[in-house]
Image (cartoon, rainbow, N blue to C red; front, side, top):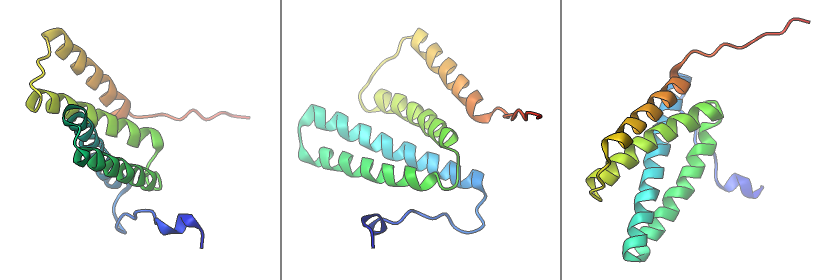
Length: 132
C-alpha cells in the first residue's frame, strides 16, 4: 500500500456527461478558492486562528478536487472556468462584505476580461490535422 492510496481520487457518478462533471468541478473549485480567499482576508484583519485553519482546510480540499477533476476534463478548461467564476465571486465579496467601490473604468475592464475569458471557454475549438 503506497501513501497515495490513503487519499483516493473523487469519482463522478456513472453516466454523468463530461461537461456536467467539468462544470460541477469548476463551481466547487471556485467556491473553495473563494472560501480560502475570504479566510485569508479575515485572518489578515483579525489574526484569529479559526480563519487561518479554515483557509488551510479549504485549499487542501481544493487541491484534492482539482486533481480529481482532471480525470474527467481538460486542464485548461477546468482552470479557466474556475478562474472566471472565482473572479466574479471575489468582486462580489469585495463589494458586499468589504464595501469596495470600483470606479466605472474598472467595471469596464472587469466586463472586458470576463468576456474574453468566456470566449476562451465557450468558443469552438478546431484541431488542425497535418497530412504526411
